[in-house]
Image (cartoon, rainbow, N blue to C red; front, side, top):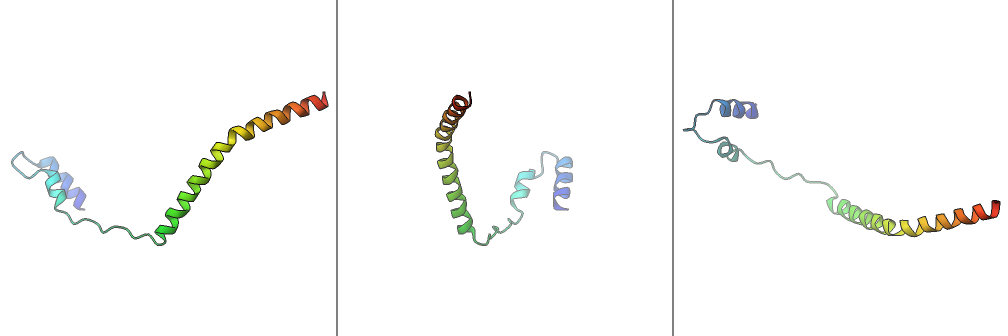
Length: 78
């Protein structure tokens, strides 16, 4: 309702009235959201990102091993 009223007011506002941004700053701010176990979530995310970085480093070596294994299989069965 407030947003609709502010929008309607901004559409009809003359240059002499208070700008819309000034009227928005007067509105009460929402309190910060409290997340249960926030520290655990941050720690799990950090560990997950570290694991992904480590896996990304290992992909080229694993890919090279796979190519060598394909060559061996091709040689053995040909």
